[in-house]
Length: 213
Image (tube, rainbow, N blue to C red):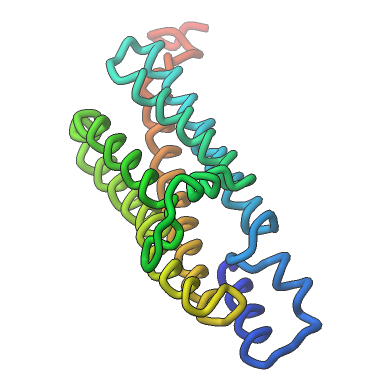
């Protein structure tokens, strides 16, 4: 609903030139920063961090391996949530002067970090059950595809035509929609993982054997 609303107001604003929609566009468009979709995306990421921290705690109490991976993921998602809210990654763009599809040059150091992180977590991922591994992979591909890969055509277009046009808004909309979808799927998988771990940890209470009170 949020992505549909953002797409609708962007299309009407740019295609028909309805200037009165500008405040609404700034509030609900996915191509703007520090608005309703930004708050929602940051909140989703923070929820992922909190659930990851809970999984880490349950894993530790059960004496299972892998606690440090869950903790590291929780810290990473807490940082990404903060970055989503205040745009820390944009400062990385000052490190390089590039053009074309790398116009938003922050994608270069970000791609290096994502690649190294993916390789470091590969053994952890392979130890997960097939269903969970598949869920995490789909969510990760959607999120990274939006956050990094869609920045390439967006950078190319921005360098040539600027960012105050409908095509920019549509490309950015696809990027943000992919990110939201990826995080939503990841959060759903994490809730499933936490629920399964909590059920395993539960100890039956109530009547003793034989029905004695």
